[in-house]
Length: 100
Length: 472
Image: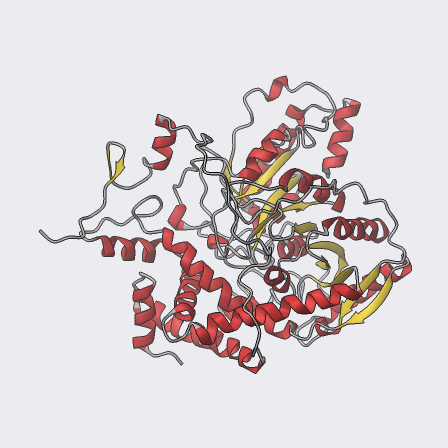
């Protein structure tokens, strides 16, 4: 079973805050799932290379030329920037991270 | 009641039986009548303004889906319209561009009826985790329609759309298709562009069609696939006509039946239907071979390490700063934490937490790296099998549709529903689920899954079509 401290540490890493009942629930659920995945320890993987993706493609490159599939317009600007909770002109405004 | 396929509508257009406007109006009317109960659609879209001018003609080769009304899973962007991904975190999000698959469908002449309900951020297999309430199974509204593309499957099964798009990360197209008694195709990883799909687990996600028939699935796949500069995982492969070989007999085709598929947990009524369908294939002249996928039993555990890991990385973009649900706060960190904690539902939180755990310092080798190695072994099992057989067959799911609410409190029990579908996503293989009759006990549809080697959708669809003709 995961401890409270472990669950809180993971939540902090994941940028989440958990209510008490959520924490209890997650402790239980995550522990049972982690117990289940323990079964992988039965598999001998010595000498096996990990498979990160299945296409076999390596370094998909393209020529470095300007393209214009998305010409900037007021409408596109509104859809891209206008949906941020705080904006100023054509920019997204964020809370400051440096103390004055 | 209308029970159209793409093929039957095209035939109707060419005979002059109805116009695109009439067809679209028919479907919109039906949605108006039954969607309130089914909750298959979250958003209805306006018809094209010029639909009245779409003159009677047969769809030419440039517009193979001319005038065909489609439903789109609500994690695929249609410019200027709402895309929620079934989640509170995107409740008010307006798509800033068309997904590549939407551009392709537009070019092919399809029309869009609306956006369909789905599990929260595509995580789940019942559509119960949607922030906007569950979708009901049109065959029995006490039952789940499957998921995560449950709205898309219900829409097609209830004749609220001729076909639909879904996305399949671990079975989310095939499983709801099985539960609703329709056809669901997951193409090979790399076939179809995911540009404009809300990312869940990027080395698994693939967009696929939900249709009434294998022929319709082939028609839609013809339109969807191809290299896209906006998705570097799409392969530069010659695109074949997937409808070309459908009528070719399957006599002599080698069909593998993995002995590991018939395990504890597979319901008796599903097993009975699957074995009967294998007999049908034998009757069609296929050579049936028992095969072994030795690492099959490890697929689900592998999946539930790797997918949460990719989920935890992909969903870090939901930060309350750029778009989506946002809680105003004094500090940047509190904005992140409060926005995410309010916006994500229980299942995304569970997977983000699992992923963050598996990727965290000290655990990476034991969980993530170990799972990627087992993934290689699972892929190798399939590679070895396809040396001996042309397709592999078995059940899509261990049981038929169950009651809404029945398994909602047991995530591990729900994960076990994915046991037959996730191995394909781990290995990148194409798979299709077709209905093979109703279970003797439940009287709900059973899905028969056909699996082919990478990029061999042609054989996959041919077997599905030939079988379909003999299951009628």
